[in-house]
View 1 (cartoon, rainbow, N blue to C red):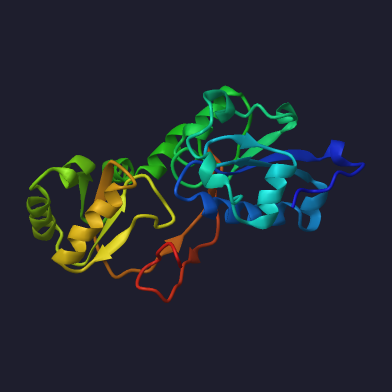
View 2 (cartoon, one colour; view 1 turned 120 degrees about the vertical axis):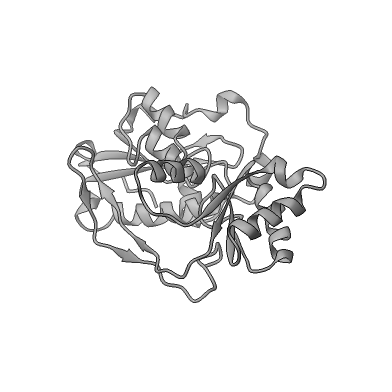
Amino acid sequence: MATAVTATEAATVTVGLVFGGCSGEHEVSIRSAQAIARALASGSNAAKYTVRPVYIDKGGVWQSGPAAAAVLAAGVPPQDSQDAAGAATPGQRLPRFEGVDAIDIWFPVLHGPNGEDGTVQGLLTLMQRPFVGSGVLGSALGMDKIAMKMAFAQAGLPQVKYLAVSRAEVEAAGQLSPLCDRIETELGYPCFVKPANLGSSVGIAKFTNRRELEAALPSAASYDRRLIVEAGVTAREVECAVLGNDQPRTSVLGEITFQSDFYDYAT
């Protein structure tokens, strides 16, 4: 899916499209990168941009060239990708592939920790290269649901009731029952339990009774040491993109619609 090399390539902007990554949202990231690659290669964009696929496997190894292009075209990670997890050396977890200096701008399409949380943004900042998306602080706040809610509260934004919970509270012997008591008393049902630092609804569960709550807490704690439990509300889900810094521009509003009980990972 990489843009073909043409005689006018020198006049185009080379975009390093980074996808994959070390998180539970690895597969979603590949699908997102496909959509962006199609957009960068469609219409007048084809003459403006040269897409350089950069795949980060589940072990954290940065790959470019035919290997990355093959993953982007397939839309799924290689069959042996799980075997690579944890096997990489520190040096392999850096963008040291051939042609890295030719990338004009980086486009991180990484979901979740190790990509959407300010870590890759910090790396690109140290490289002194421009990149698409929020900076380190905005990315970190946007990824961490607890820190984000604290920032919202400071700004006076209304939000649903919630409780911050640690993995230690969930795993402590004999503590799950008192924790559930506190959640029932302060929030009631229905509620949602979420890992603080994941997206794409990974690890999220809706619960409407004590039995479901007791199952949801350990599941979410397996993804993150910090959890958030939120009161459920009946609401519409509306999204808006913002472009720019000192003079921001907003997109039209979009609404997410679905047939499932909530916007879960499968949906």
